[in-house]
Each structure stands twice: as structure tokens, then as C-alpha cells.
View (cartoon, rainbow, N blue to C red):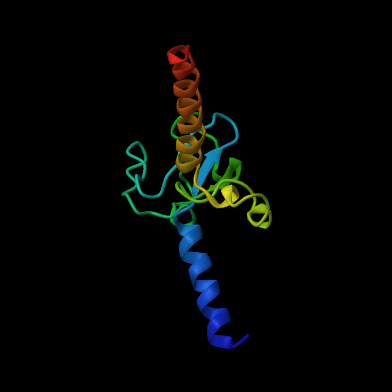
Length: 119
């Protein structure tokens, strides 16, 4: 692997991590960089790592060390090492999985109702 490719991968990872959401383990508040924080006067687009050291959870007042990275908003759900398993549904985003699940349930319900038309 060339040095340029390694640097590009590292830069892409850093850019992706800047947009990751962070959840407070104490109360469940989720800091989203694209929304910022109105109570802390944090403008939208501010990464969690760029927050001032005195910033606290606006709900419970917990420090930044109480937050865990929960990943991007519309990224694939699950652990990265498990995304290659299954029938390809592991790479779907949570909203795509919801459409697949509830669409399948609706289709099954329609088939069930169509049985009443048979005589």
C-alpha cells in the first residue's frame, strides 16, 4: 500500500469521525455535530473533538468523558467487522432496514387479506 493511499484513508477516517454522534452515558443525550448545541452556544458543524473543554451535557451536566461515540447518523448499523456477513443487509442503514422490514410485513398482510378473495 502506498503512502498516499494510507494518508488518504487516514484523512477520510478523520473526516468521518468528525461527523460522528456522541451519546451521554448518564442521560442518553446525543450530541450531533450538524446541529450543534443551542444551550452551549455551539454552532452547527462543530465536531465533538472541537468542543471547549468546559462544555458539559446540556441535559444532566456530565463532562465530555461521559460521552461515547455512537457513529454517524446514516451509516450502516452494527460493527464494521460484521458488515460483510449475511445476505447483504448488514450494509443497509437503519432507515433502509426499517423500510425492508415493514414493507415485507405490509406485503405479507396484503397477501393474507387476498386469501379472503379465494373461494
